[in-house]
Amino acid sequence: MAFEINTKNNIRDRFKCAPRPEIWKDTEPKDWNNWVWQQQKRIKSMEVLEKVIAVTDEERGAFAQSHDMFNMGITPYYASLIDPNDPNCPIRLQSVPKAGELNILPTELEDPLGEEADMPVPGITHRYPDRVLFYTTHNCPVYCRHCTRKRKVSDPSSSAANKQLEESLAYIEAHKEIRDVVISGGDPLSNSDDRLEYILSRLRAMEHIQIFRLGTRNLVTLPQRITESFANMLKKYHPVFIHTHFNHPKECSQEAFDACARLADAGCVINNQMVLLKGVNDDPKTVLELNHKLLMMRVRPYYIFQCDQAQGISHFRTPIETGLKIIESLRGWTSGMAVPHFVIDGPGGGGKIPLLPKYLLKREGNKWTFRNYKNKEYVYIDTSEPGSVETIASEKK
Ligand code: SF4
Image 1 (cartoon, rainbow, N blue to C red):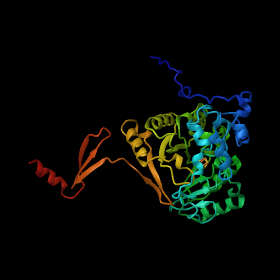
Image 2: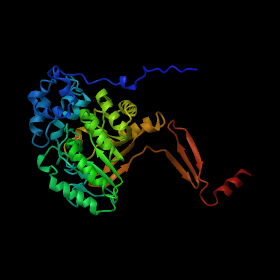
Image 3: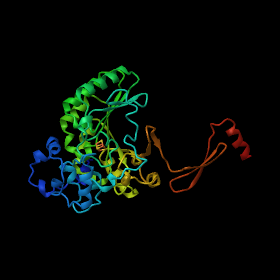
Image 4: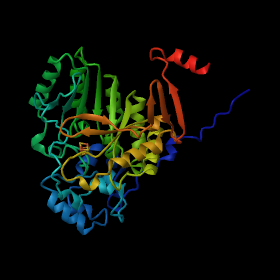
């Protein structure tokens, strides 16, 4: 029997292209789809932003007062995802300054993760024994208003010049205990392909280095950056893991879908690290939709981060309970692959601490009582404990 193959079930068709705002209506596709053009045309001023969205007085004031501390930068592509008439659009909240940024709480820290304290040479954070964070640029296509590294991101004076790059590589080469390198920034994909390949080739030549991770938001903010030639270049240096940062289902466009497909087809494993942000994704329905879309894009929901103690982001912070409720709403109700780890970064350098709803209800000797996702109780007898099997047998008599 011949089986007829249905070819009308392309999952890509479920993702929509970003709509093109009027200001770029006549832009040639060769420009719009070119990541260098997108970088060059980033929105950095209110004059241009006013041509794309209906800017509010609050946003205008916040831009004027925050500009010296943390730049605004929005790619035309990411701006096209903004609802021009909704001041609470989740894409807009992440990319356009708000008055909340000017409010610095006494509990907030310039370096909330204590990355500078664990810096043996400029450009390397070496906190855990077998892995390092390697800064390669200060630049990002979009300056996310909730960024943890506001202290250096967007500041050209913090850029990793070639001398610093060589010192960082020399440090990694000298430390044979390092097996995993997180290449970061800013966004490392702001580097040219040649510079990135130089870094990857130097690292791959080191016997003790096993894996690399590229921490990048380009899949979200500038998917045009993921060209065929870039993806093909990565193939030479596997295993390469991509850690990206989708925060809302609106970011899952067809352009983003294609960028993820190019990387997945090239053999990269893609993980998502969502940050929990008030007004953006602090409800179970949004996170569920995001995670389902990510899986269709071959991206594994990996972490949900509690918003850290970086300065000027208190307007984004949610109660810890919110994250726990979101995990509770996912676990058991959808595929385990769609349930990320909810973590909080210990302020000042404590590392990632996992947070879980309470599923263990009590322990009586070798009897452990748990509840499942529907709140039904289950008892597990731990027979690995000495004498437990004999006790059960005598109880049964
Ligand atoms: S892409 Fe990452 S490093 Fe760059 S501004 Fe956004 S959160 Fe910060």
